[in-house]
Length: 133
Image (cartoon, helix red, strand yellow):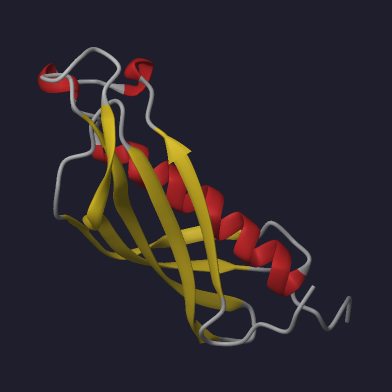
């Protein structure tokens, strides 16, 4: 466990399976990225506070680009504000690899520049470190 310091960043990578596709064109719904933000926030809280924490809410969510089956996402959580029990976190989901079904059923490539798919800000809360009164 490290002290909660602004700038601490946790990164996960995740392959998006065809079972995750929800819409035509192998599109994945926006909730998929939000669930991954919850996972990366959990690790951030464990690292800073020794507890999984609880997600209190989002203050901003923006969908910038599509997420599709066959993508590899890099999801990050950066600690941007530390309160007594609250932690404000900036999230990003970037597509780092993309399927190329037009080339073949299993073709994919690493993108030269990752695509920002989803960005958000959220607040998590952790138990008080002061202990019982």
